[in-house]
Image (cartoon, rainbow, N blue to C red; front, side, top):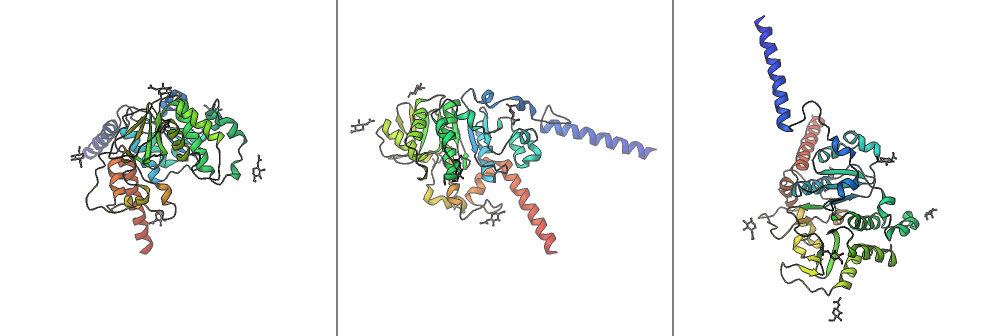
Length: 341
Ligand SMILES: *[C@@H]1O[C@H](CO)[C@@H](O)[C@H](O)[C@H]1NC(C)=O
Ligand SMILES: *[C@@H]1O[C@H](CO)[C@@H](O)[C@H](O)[C@H]1NC(C)=O
Ligand SMILES: *[C@@H]1O[C@H](CO)[C@@H](O)[C@H](O)[C@H]1NC(C)=O
Ligand SMILES: *[C@@H]1O[C@H](CO)[C@@H](O)[C@H](O)[C@H]1NC(C)=O
Ligand SMILES: *[C@@H]1O[C@H](CO)[C@@H](O)[C@H](O)[C@H]1NC(C)=O
Ligand SMILES: *[C@@H]1O[C@H](CO)[C@@H](O)[C@H](O)[C@H]1NC(C)=O
């Protein structure tokens, strides 16, 4: 009898502890925890304040790489008071309603309060912009750089229509960008389009969309991307070379020093995957662009325990993504041990 009472007390204790633990983890959600209140919000609802940070996945891929996850997570942590929008072409209404099973790797991101994942709908996006006629007549299968071209078009239309900051999915945010209208210099007198921010309906982006269509040439990589931004900016202002870590100003657009996002220039991109004698501080940077485009052949990885720069960046700026890497590494080690037994 005494034993039964003891067992029963023990069970009650464990149950109560479980509830307290869940409350501790996420107050306000005890038995089920669905981040569903976000579900009823449309992209327009979320983005109308013009403060969004916008990421794109323009392929059908629904299983983003660790670097993509890190990029979105780091922004969500740095910009706590701004919505982080991840637009995915492969997402439809069905995968949206059952995100956890259709894309498990995304569920931790979706659970973050300020992260929103939406399907990417191009007809609506290009409506009332100079890009719509182009989009309706271009034949995507004949464009060898299509993934880049469409991504170049979408980011212009997105930031023009809603305002906010566009970021490539290989950018790790490390501190907030303090200006609204800005372009990122990749080097003196050359602007990238991997990250930029504008207020809603800024004339510069409208002019860029017009130039996109007028001077369209899909055979030249980047002609609608960094080269377009650079030629539009130099039409507007006479740019000078950067001397030190200063920024430039062109009307009300800040042209941000290469140190802000590209402290490691693209020729040295493998530095991110190396072990450094002393850890760089990146005190002059807002975010780090990892040049994943350069990594197509070598396919360098983020290896747990390697002490490479990229591993340390993950540990600091996207700890949840980093934890999933640790878990995956442990699992594959486990599998390996079982196989060799
Ligand atoms: C998906 O949902 C949106 C908004 O709820 C709706 O307007 C649209 O018609 C739906 N699309 C499909 C294919 O069901
Ligand atoms: C697009 O190009 C492909 C390949 O050249 C061709 O088979 C297809 O008919 C074209 N589509 C349209 C709508 O013109
Ligand atoms: C740039 O400088 C040149 C020569 O100094 C001048 O003729 C031109 O008007 C300037 N362009 C702009 C956009 O300020
Ligand atoms: C910046 O300039 C554009 C025109 O080029 C204008 O539409 C916009 O209102 C200006 N923004 C600010 C904050 O002054
Ligand atoms: C970078 O910033 C940190 C923290 O603010 C500071 O301790 C450090 O001295 C700075 N490094 C350089 C090279 O200015
Ligand atoms: C990176 O990881 C993938 C999958 O885990 C593996 O197939 C590939 O060999 C790794 N690449 C390098 C360079 O280690």
